[in-house]
Amino acid sequence: MNQPAGSQPPPGSPADPNDPTEGRPDAGRSPAGGPPEESESADDRLRAPRKRRPLRLPIGRNPKSRRSERPLRAIRSIPTILTLGNLICGFSAIYYATKPVGETAFLQLNTLTVAGLLLFLGMFFDAIDGSVARMTRSTSDLGAQLDSLADVVSFGVAPAFMMLRLVSHYYAPSGTVTLLSPDADSMWAKIIWSIAVIYVCCAALRLARFNAETTSPAEEDHSSFKGLPSPGAGGTVASLIVLHQHLLYTKVDLTYVATGVEDNLAFARVAALGIPLVTLLCAFAMVSSIRYAHFANRVLRAKRDFAGIVQITLPLIACIFWTQLTLAIGFTVYALSGPILSLWNLRRKSPAPAPPAP
Image (cartoon, rainbow, N blue to C red; front, side):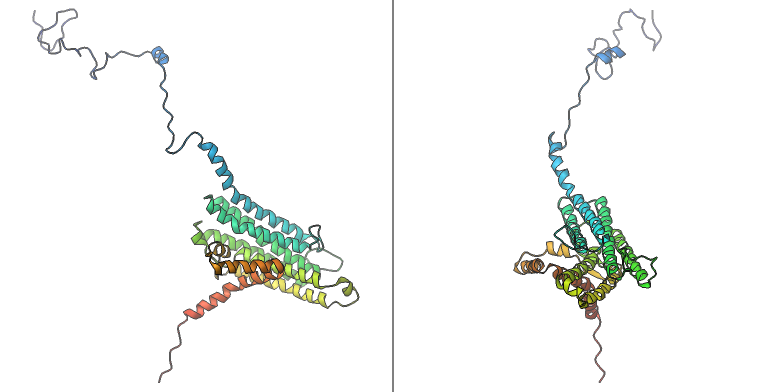
């Protein structure tokens, strides 16, 4: 019986000899050449073993790399520890500056002298924390902001308190050990207190401007500063106060003064009034546009030839024998170097006067 074209033969009917797929080995398989397609049940999927993906490690890494990274993390935390050391030194300097002027248990030094030494120690931490961060490749925005906050305390607030304590020791009302304040009856007390506030504000503005204008932690971008750096300003004020106390307590014989001769103490009172003037000038220098060299980077990057070694050795020897005088001269010269070099460069760039007409 003939079937119409396109119809399928019924099941169980003999194979059609004209069928081209009949007798082929791949007949009944899936189009991809695999086994016949069958529906996979959920039980079969659960029984099938899971294939574990091979562990892929980055090139050059091994499973022990985490152990090797632990010392690196400890090394990268050194700059932060140095910055916090600067902050602790600044806070300690404020503590000693707020105490009445007198001897301390630390080497029988004066309270203002101890405050100045703590400020210089914080300055050392501040000078090397940036270099250590670049050496360990651990520079970050967090470290930069923390450094500025520590500098505000150490080189902004601490020198202002030292200046207030020095002037208050000589010009506060008799019988009191308080600091000069704006609610005092004396006009000089209000002026001295205002100078201290201006200095702190200028130090904060100086550091904020530095953070806003400095976009790269590279050492080449820190070869100079715009305005007197806050460590230089704080060091100038603190070094002069330490020198003032050193000259007072080493040259004045208190038993001799008690007999009625007060020339040295009179000089000390007059010299104490010069410290607020220096503080005010340093405050204005911090927010100025005068260029100052980066002293720490210049020393670290200096050539290790004979001349460079002499330039480093001679100040160190002078600082060992005449510590107070050397620090005061060094910081004062650095504070004056900016205006002097600016005037020198301005004079060199000015055009030469035209020759007179014949």
